[in-house]
Structure formats: structure tokens, C-alpha cells
Image (tube, rainbow, N blue to C red; front, top):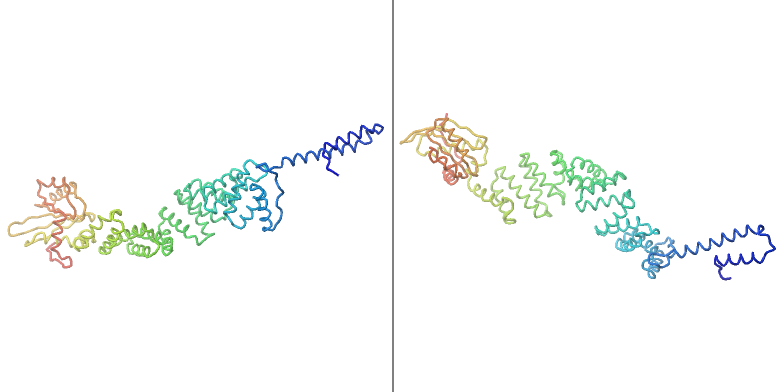
Amino acid sequence: MGRIDGYEVIKHFLTRIACAGHTCLMDILPVVIVIIVLALLVIIAGTIKSWKKTPDGSKKGKKIRVKDQGQIMKEANRRLAQNPKDPDALLAIGEVYYSQEAWDKAYKAYEILVELASGSMALDEFLINKLYGLSALRLGKAEEAYKGLILAYTIKPDDFEILHNLGYLEFQKKQYEKAIGFLRSAIKLNMEHAPSLRYMGHALFKTKNNKEALVYLKKALDLQPDDKESLFTMAECFHELGQNEQAIRLFTHLRTDPVLGPSAALFAGTIHINQRQHQKAIMDFELGLKHSNIKPELFIETKYRLAAAYLKEQEIGKAVELLTEIQELSPNYKDSQAQLAKYRELNSSRNLQIYLMAPTSDFITLCRKITLTFFPKAKVKITNISVQKNDWADILAEVETSRWSDTVLLRMIRSSTTVGEIVLRDFHAKIKDVKAGKGYCLTSGIFSDEAKKFVEARLIDLMDKDKLLNLLKTIDSRQKGLLVHD
């Protein structure tokens, strides 16, 4: 028999009622009600079927319910060949590819589904955007990943996986404050998730919240002890907080790491220099330079600081060698050119090294010899020596020659920069105090024009770098001069 739709059923029934006038209506009332209900159900079913369309207007097929992935793929591909926008087939194929970590194919399926899901009640817009975003993230498509995940976040803002990955993406964009917001919410949902704790700690360090950063970094390292980058950042936090003992312990531990070793060595050496532990600093820098994969800019900076450490230890020759290498690699690097010119000259004169860099006791010994050389063929008696903060030495001496005798005051300034009028005014006052007949001011630098004008009408002679070097050439600093003094 052919199928009778709901309207035909009602028509047929009403015709029979009209023909059965002798039958009491009350006797058949239950049957009437059942038939009417059935007819309405048929009508409703037909209407729903007419509504059940896909977004492109074609009829929607049944969901693919087979469990075998091979059969799922076969059926899904068959249906997609007929309709490339079949949502059930795309969902099935996307799920299989996602489970197989075939991210590029999963991404393509969910990319179409994102368009179909927009405003659709039949598709799970949250899940589709989430999987689209995560597939894009695995492919390194950061912009697309963020787009999918942020749409999913607006639908469901308490999904841990979305919160964590949005935090990660904001961190990669250097939007650290936004990253902290997402990661903080993610950690509230899962306090034992090492990656969330890790990026939270790094983001807090980037925003200079060092104390809080340490809390999260420690938790992350408890879960992943081999995370060397977090260990390095923890050391940086300690350093920023002035807790250098903890910092140096971590940096020293990381000096041999093939990736972080050069930077760790540079940090360790710098801290040791600031602590005046120059030999330890030299060891740190030399270890850093041994790494074969050291970055060029880090290589030059480490050499520069190693040269500074050698200078602190008065190993001028080694420092000059390093500064020469820096000039060959980067001629305009910081003040390396000026440093090289200065210390090349120093390297050629042991006496000049002592004058500028030696401990105070060695400097005073040299000053005595300069005084003797300053007045050749004269009887010199040193009556007083005073030192001003290792900046200069004042030597008061009684000098007797065949032509004259007088008390003189010599000021020997330990500087290679410009000496100004203020120093000369102080020197002139000192000459008056000690009742010296004349003063001599020596420097390894130069005198300013104001300083030269100040001494024009005063009994003070100025001796700049060139004159000092001539004096130093006549002195053998390794012999002990026989000076007469009190």
C-alpha cells in the first residue's frame, strides 16, 4: 500500500463518520482521539524533516556511528565527495586526524567547521573553535590559534586547556600582563600543571615581580627539575633582589650548560667582579668563552669584561690582547678603542702601571723615586708624605742644590683625565699651609685651561702626561732608591 499522509488520514476518517449516521458518536470517541493524535505526529515529523538541513541547504545525513577509524574515514570521505561541507563527516574526520596528531589535516577540517558552526544550534561552536585553535597552535599558526581559542573562551571562560594556551600565546607575544591573567586563572583550576607554573614565573619576572616569580618558578622546578631555563630565570630573580649568594650558586651550576652556559658564566663573572673577587671572575669568563655555540654579541661582551678583570689584577698584557681582539671584531664596541690606546701605553711602561694602578704602598715608593729624579744632583730630604684617598700623594721635601735651597711640595695625581682649577686651588692652599717656597703638580692626564690660568701668577709648575712619562723613563722601579727622610 502507498503511504497515506496525515491530512489523508483525517479526511478518510471524517468521511466514514458521515456515512455511519446510525452509529453513536460517543461509542467511537476514543478511536477518534487516537487517530487524530497519530495524524498530528505524522505531520510534525514531516515538518521537522523538512527543517533538517545543513548550512549550505542540502539535506543532512545521519551521524557516522561506526567505531573503526578506517571505516569512519571511508564513510566520511565518501560523504565529503558528495558534499564538501557535510558537518557530520567533517566532525568525524577532524576527530580522527586530531587523535592521530595529524595537525595539518585536522586544522583544515576544523577551519571549515568554524565557518559552519557560526550561529548554528546543531554544532558545538565551543568545541570546534577550541580544536581549531589547538590544531593551529601545533602548526605554529599563532594568529589563527589565538582567534580560535579566544572565541572558545568567550563561550566557556573556565576551560583549563584554553586558559593555559591563551596565557602561553600572550607570553610569546610579550604581552606579559595579559599572560599573567590567563595563567593565574588556569593555575586556579590546576595547581600542579608545570607548564602553567613555568610561564607564570617567567611572565612575572618579565614584569619585575621577582618575589612572586620565585614562588611559581620553585613550584615548576619541583615538578620539572631539569628545566634549566627556569633555573636560570630564578638566578636572575635572586640577582635582581640583591640575593647574590643564591644567584651565584645557580649561575655557577649552569656555567657548563651547552645552551645557557655562556650567559650564566657572564652573570657569575660580573657578580664576582662587583664583589672584588677578580680571580673567580676571570675563571667564570674563561669558562664562558670555551663554549663553541656562544653568540657573537655575548662572545664580545665576555671578552670585554674579562679584559676588565685582568686590568683589576694588573695583568695589562692579557687585557691589551683581549681589547685588540675586540677591536678586530667590532671596532666601535663601547669604549674599547680608548681603552686599548690607554692600556697599550701602560703595557709599555711598568712605571706608569704602578703610578696609575698599583697599591698605595707601591705608588708611594715610586713617588719617592720621582722626587729624587726630579731634582738631579741635589740633596733631597723628604719631611712628610700624605695621601688623599688614593687620588694623589703630596710629598714635602727640603731640596739643597749648589745654587739654591728651598722647601718644595710635590702633588702627584693618579689620574689620566683632565685636572681642573679646583684641585689647583686646593694645592695652592696646601703650599701656604706648609710654608713651601714652590709647588710642582704632576699628572698622567692633562690640565684644563682654567687650571693653567690659575697658576700663571703663582709659584706652581704644571707637569702633564708627556713630562711625567719622561721622568718615569729614567726610573727603574725594581731598584730601591736611597732617599733621605725622617
